[in-house]
Length: 595
Image (cartoon, rainbow, N blue to C red; front, top):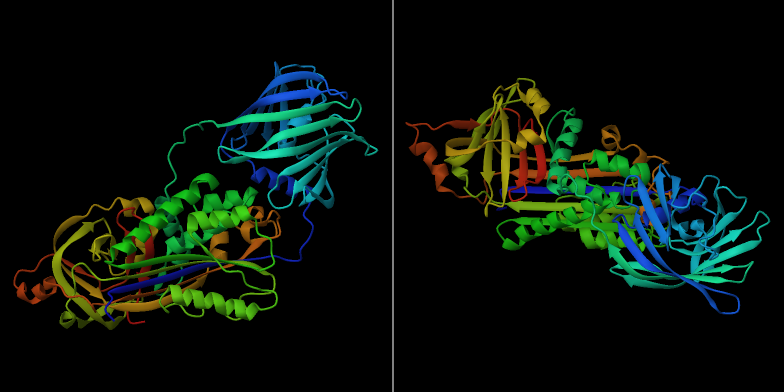
């Protein structure tokens, strides 16, 4: 072997479902909401009314300003000189009419179109009912009845099952007699968004037809945010959170917060409602709109390091969906666009064991055979619907190499106070070193200087607990390194770590994702999915093989004039980070190099 360090890490999320049930109406209507654009838009057009005999009765200008991503969500509708502003707070609408005589069921200037017709895409009232499933324009659709406020009438919507588009809306009286019918006649892509260009409303009583024609869409500027979302900062904060949760375990520890955060970011892309909120807060994401592009940028930045050829740094993502389960094309498209996933359909229902072996083989291939049997027998069931996996493989040589012949056995003090003999690598070189109140920090760069290992060594041999208590993203970012000649003594070590993270993530603040109340409707349009488990496995080996640096020879030559020493002869922490973005790819604790 000619590597100094191998870091392989896999984060894997499994999503399962119970018995497939018909979703409740409010869930379907909320699915419609997830399809609405989060950025503000303005639509302009005209409302034309033709009488039963074909004469044009009116032709009125229309303007809509829709900001469904605001808090609270708002929509402004203006027809000629009359307007309506609707605000939704906790799903409940508040109406503000320019004409105080108007109500939601009022006709707009005698056109036959009501304000409720115009704002149908944001209506989901209590007591809504799913009344059936039919086809409209050869598309499968849910049929949902919505009570209309201030009236005994109901609005019946035909909602496309997977994309959430409302294909038709009818206003019915209490005896289910049709009063009005609104249907989409044509759609058009305007500035990257599909818009119902022509809506036709037929008034059964008068026979008049009102056609709402949208002629233009404009994306409006959003209010500036305090700061742009940074995936690196998000991962680094999660690093500290995860380490604190797992540090209670005794012994060596090693994990990749980058891998865990990336795998869960793919899951987060399908989260909605409170599930979305808990994951966003716990994992330090930046909302659906900002999180995925930032992770995509970081992935491409790491791939660029691999292309330089100085080190090996492979990042791979994959989705393994149930072959006959209808995941939304929007969700699959998101994972492809931002995470570069490989999508491999499998049959968990009939070939559970074969699916497990296929996923394990993929992991082995992406980690150069270092991670084997990630999924143990019985970990997948016939209820599994999706497995998401992230694998990261790192192999790099020190920029300044240790001499193998300088390695010697030396004592290492264990947490219990006893000593073991371990192979200790030694070299003297100009390196970056920092001193804090209770620890020293050493930076050891890898070939190419794109990546470095940061070693945090407590001043006190029993100081690991105090160091772990003070560990924070700000502390790591604030280290002030100075380059000087230092004698470095670092033990060789090699170990593997595997952990199931469900309890950890629940304790950190996202329990709903693992419960029956989970909402991953962004994946399939329903609330029938929940996280089953999150498995993380990592392998690390640090040695002097493949390194050859003159500085290591200086250990004996400079024996009479000793430089400052960095002697890692007791438990220490270490990080592997990307220097350009500051992203922590791995974090570990060496409690016993001989273990």
